[in-house]
Image 1 (cartoon, rainbow, N blue to C red):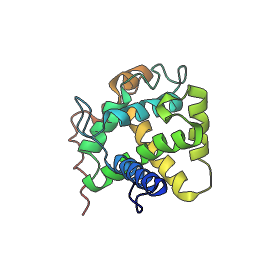
Image 2: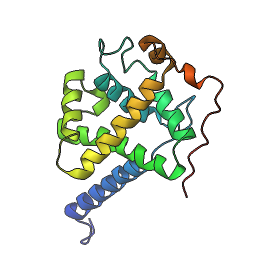
Image 3: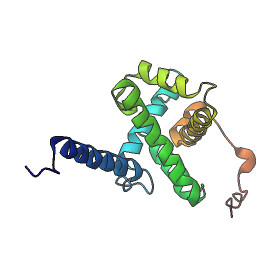
Image 4: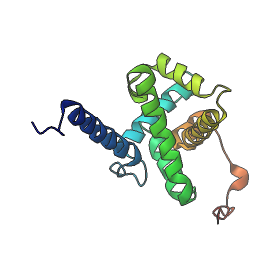
Length: 175
C-alpha cells in the first residue's frame, strides 16, 4: 500500500462519498408518480399516511389514507399554488419522512397509525417554531385536499346551491 493511502484515508473517503450520496438523495425530489403532476411516489406515501392520521376511520364517513387524498394534494400543488411554493412543500414532506427515520428507525409512511399520530403531535408542538409552521402548512394542505374529495363532500352532505351558475374566482397570482 502506498504510504499516503492508509486505511484511515480510505475509510474517510468512503464516508465522504456515502455522505455525499445521501445528501444528493435528500436534495433530489424525484419525478412525479404515474398519473400525477407534482408528487413523487414517496411523497404520495407520506401524504396518505398523514391523511390516515388526520382523518381516521369513524371521523368522517370516508377515512383518510385510502389513496384518494394524495391526488387532490397533487392537483392543488399543480393548479392552485404558485410554482415557487411547490418545492418547499415537497421538502417538508421529505423532512417528515427522513426525520422520522432518524428519530424512530422507520420512515413516517411505514409507522403504525398510533406511532404516526405521536409524530404528528410532536411536529405540532410549540417548539421549535419552524417545525410547527411546517406541520401546520402540511396539515392545512392535506385537510383541504381531503375535504375537496368528491366522495367526502357527498358523504358529509355539503351543498353549495348558492354558488350554482357563479363563475369560479380568478386564480391567485403571486409575483
